[in-house]
Length: 120
Ligand code: AMP
Image 1: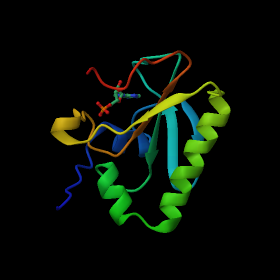
Image 2: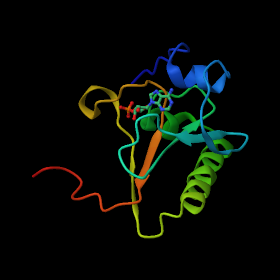
Image 3: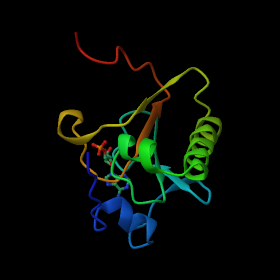
Image 4: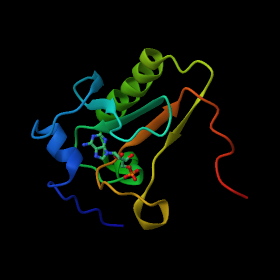
């Protein structure tokens, strides 16, 4: 499929420094920051710095360096937030996944028991 990126989305604006964020970790290819409406004691968003709309876009088009940088950020977020008892990583995608912000982001959610993934 074709991916079209809207550079006015809120995470693009955060990356340009137009909107503040509570940064947890940053490297050359990724930024991690606290979700503004946390669903659990730990709720951090990891985003690539490149213009990717979704997980499938990022996985198919990002360079190996971008992908490695992103995964390093995920590891650092887990280390920094101390989610040793476990966590959930969620990438809501497009309409069926109820994605609100069209810049790829991975939610890292933890700090409490999260229940089953989906209602049966
Ligand atoms: P999604 O539904 O997966 O697209 O999730 C978007 C997430 O972005 C939601 O959990 C929002 O609470 C979060 N969010 C929206 N605006 C901001 C912001 N300015 N700073 C941090 N998180 C935000």
